[in-house]
Length: 196
Image 1 (cartoon, helix red, strand yellow):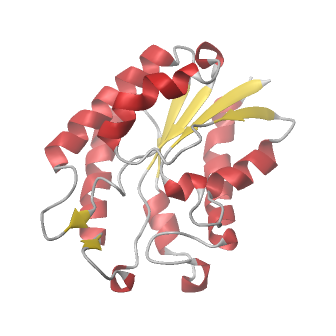
Image 2 (image 1 turned 90 degrees about the vertical axis):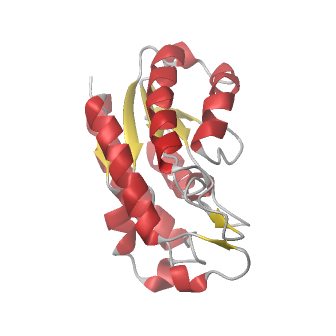
């Protein structure tokens, strides 16, 4: 049985009782592929680089066939008007290092990178905000890194931007319908990479 490792933030794992796309991927792939993932929100790119070795140790990393991953929404987060959590040049550097780290820890695995999803800017309140202009900039950086390193990319930003507002739980998370739709798109992009 082919094995898949999912790596990402709350769009993957879900938030406050709502499920993310991982839930629907597990349901779709039950009995067909074995799915592994960290039991936590993997947050931002540098955090993932630090903890990937621990997450890899919790699964048969040398037997994983495909790593599906994303980082970006935490990286673009602006708090207290103090700039983005991860500066763009650092984000670009971290993504390149993550590609190499995944290759090291999951030596058999192909990779599929997902761009970061659209955010509803007018729904933010308080000291934190994400801006779609930042997300598009960081997605472009990610696409450049992945092209240079021969990693395929699925554009979840465009897909998520087109989803109905009723499928959005809040500023950044999705209802069941939204997460299920994202999962279907991811599955369609992933499954050709798992063909024998």
